[in-house]
Length: 451
Image (cartoon, rainbow, N blue to C red; front, side):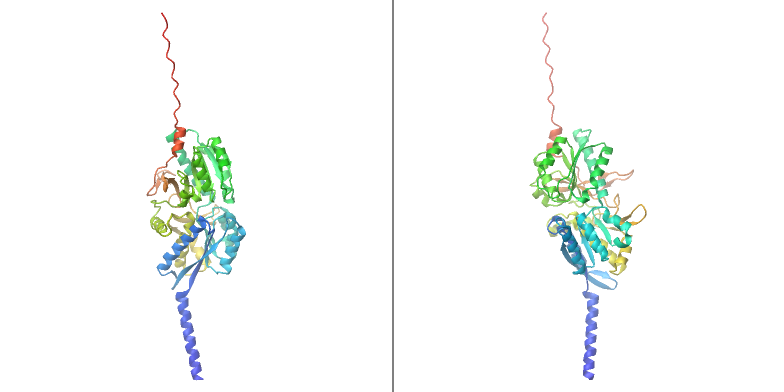
């Protein structure tokens, strides 16, 4: 009997020893990475998250109170471009089957709203890294107790995206006036037919005339259109100097390619997510030249001290520039992990309480979460000098270069420029079209009068 009791006692000691070791060193923080994994946007989500997890795990993991915990990533293909229900199911599986502690990613607004509802019901912190619609964050302000677990990391919201796009359009308009002598700038708006882009149309219609420009038409192709020649024909007939693009999906490739194949005498400026990827040059067969887009990263451009290491590390590892959906890296490393280590717990309420009041740097900017006009938290990122500005980038001879902000002066005594910015280049066929020489009319010589 004594021998039996001793065996039981030893077994209990061993069990608790193993349990204690596992609790202290064997636990993992599970982070779900959700996105359209068959598309560039989802690939960016996964790659950014992998970089962050590897960086954190290489240094020993995340310090949670008095123990270290490694990060484990769980990939979920939302298939959200094609099916919102698939996205909802993917989020449900992450939370109920895979038991993730946090989720990052998401791209298409229609799917994000559904995925957000599921994560909020389960009280799981979800950091958005792709969708721009303002409702994702206005929900936080209106129904705080329910939606406080959602934060936006990238991009800034649709309203700010439009504001920044207007700044880019105005910048290009000044170049056209200076270099081509065009007084009245005509603009064509081409926005993919998607919910996130809907608010931009009335905003453009209302704002361009106030900027002294003429809106010559609005075109709304499918997000997955492969032929936009009809739209381009209409744009050319309208005499547009600037084509204001609003694309997040694959239509950005055929549009850029066909516009340049047809030598439309206009320059493309705006949002084109596909143009932020290195494969854009190959996908357009080199016809993506001179396209200007709202971007996040560009080779040689440093927004702050974190930018260079991330961009160079990403290129070295994946062989291409990161797209903005690779902001999952920042969501994990700078938002989640840093906050977890500050509070010493994985409790979502404790993390939210600290995270929403933090001001911190990521690889592109300084993040400060906004409040609405009633002072309620939005968990949306602040735009402006010293905070998030994004970049204006242009394809120039097969390379993406930063062209904005380049001595941007949004207020008196404020001049914003990042290291590595370059001047804007106009398409040569546009220069030829607007600088074509008008034949001079030579007056006939007078016939001498006969005496």
